[in-house]
Length: 284
Ligand SMILES: *[C@@H]1O[C@H](CO)[C@@H](O)[C@H](O)[C@H]1NC(C)=O
Ligand SMILES: *[C@@H]1O[C@H](CO)[C@@H](O)[C@H](O)[C@H]1NC(C)=O
Image (cartoon, rainbow, N blue to C red; front, side):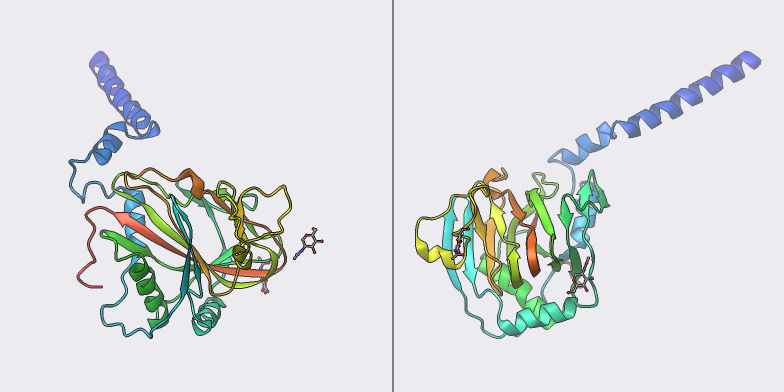
């Protein structure tokens, strides 16, 4: 009897330990299934994708947005990098800054799926702005600008505030990229650039020779700064594609928010998320 009981407990313990090990090494069977192309949309909504989908927004179909013109300059065609002078109007910029004013909280970085504060990587505050008509018209403009890409949705808009010494170290905007989901493109929009420093630096993009670019980029950077640095010009935006047609991330899109030396910078991120098979929910 004692022998049988002992054997039974041992098997149970082995089973429990096996489950613990299985979880500790990252549930291999589970991730293999979720990476497979043949699974249904429901099954591959692993936690990351699900959290992401909850962040997607859909501008109302009944919007009546005022006409807004801007000037686009091609910076690079591969990867596609565009400079958009006057992407937002003065009124839109004022509105975004005002609606952020009581919502600022410390920015976090994602470390192995956990959100944490790390000043050495990212020092800024961010605000989730309410999706009123003005904001939805900006979401719609961002989709229209890109030619309404299929299965691609705007992520909820956040503003970012950088005080003196605020910065964001070199990073890609790729997100947790997979075949089915990734951050297809980025707009870095400047709302307030009354500062020294604070530009957006792309160390792997060359500085154009034409002096006309000096209106938008640092032409007088010290030699220690590699590549191109876009100046935070109010209302303007830098737009780039993060992946090529085969879903490979462009290494040239690595970028940093340079430290603010004096004054303050406020920016707006507009990210477009590709999610294969995802549709606009009926109730949006
Ligand atoms: C940034 O500056 C604003 C004043 O413009 C201040 O209210 C805010 O507390 C500052 N944030 C940090 C993190 O110091
Ligand atoms: C460019 O940098 C030099 C040396 O740092 C400085 O003397 C000059 O005033 C700067 N020019 C502009 C237009 O900022």
